[in-house]
Image (cartoon, rainbow, N blue to C red):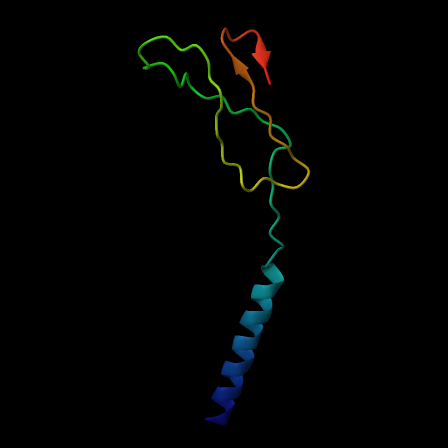
Length: 81
């Protein structure tokens, strides 16, 4: 009986050690640049739009060393920050 217990303990120890041997550090990979293009948000608005005075976005978590930039265009040629 004692021999079976010893074999069980050694087997569990080997499994645990092998599991840690295969574990790797998790690295967060992301692209250093990219583009997010929205659809025409005013497409279904009736009436004339004379100005957009403000807008809101939530980017509470961005990776260190990166930034966000928002640009607007009326004609898809001239862009404004």
